[in-house]
Length: 434
Image (cartoon, rainbow, N blue to C red):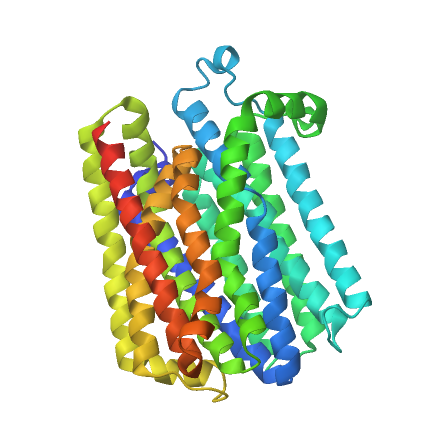
């Protein structure tokens, strides 16, 4: 066994590498806000936040296809391709079709943004900067396909290594704006770096699967296989993804409709960034355990599966506790630094954020595990209550307590998360017993 294979097989080492990459992703995410809030006027920064929300919608609009292909390719890899021809299992031509779809999604979303900028729907004096940043962020779609395809064929360590390098370079380019680099040049260079990394990762997928160039271009064959065998999963996954997209991002827009005061949106943006930080830490922990979880599930070993799920949930809760302690001790100072003192946050807001984070932890573990196992219908059924709660939180907060809209909104949003977390806990217990 090669050294790389030994490192790949170590759940602890893989978790450490993934967490290191998550650390870089978190630094990058906060650096984006830290830098742009300082180089842009406040009106431009609000337009930038809306662009970020649209970018989140776009990235999530792959409808879970990368999760589907992970589940299918992982089963193909573990079974060494046995039975694929008989039961509609994975075919290499699927990779080209999905890569084409994600590319078209990026192009389509970019055209929508160009139209919005041209017609003044998104008011800004820096249209080229926003377009370049959107393109750079949207490249996370093909990057996600490369990541999950490599993970399915036991290439987690390889991806994390090249992605760490990408993050280090892009963080440096972000900070260079504060030293005087033209923001457009900085973002354009970040875009170029991402393209190189994605191409490198996809080339390794190509070699590990022993693919030919024709597999990437066989859109008719691959498309036919996708239509014949993906539709059920695509329907459930797409509906679940859309529900999740709206539930997590809609408050940016419902808050904007409910009040012109920028403070509630900044508080939600703070919660959103903290929650994304937590979800990335949880994802890293779960993904490190997924090779063993998927093996136990496909082998029918429910006792082992239950043990692994319990360990994953326990490890995830450690991050929730740690992040909550940071918020209690320094949340107000972090908020002030992040938003350059343009708003404040109080202890009551932080308390509701912490409650929401614990609920989110359980929810994330369930979603990452069940998506890897292809259980999209179960995920859809549990996402709809959160969607309803998310959409209703801002209007109800405005109706019930307009004087403390921020606090009322966070309380209702946290309540929705807690309710859905309970549903996911029941789902995980059933998964380990059946």
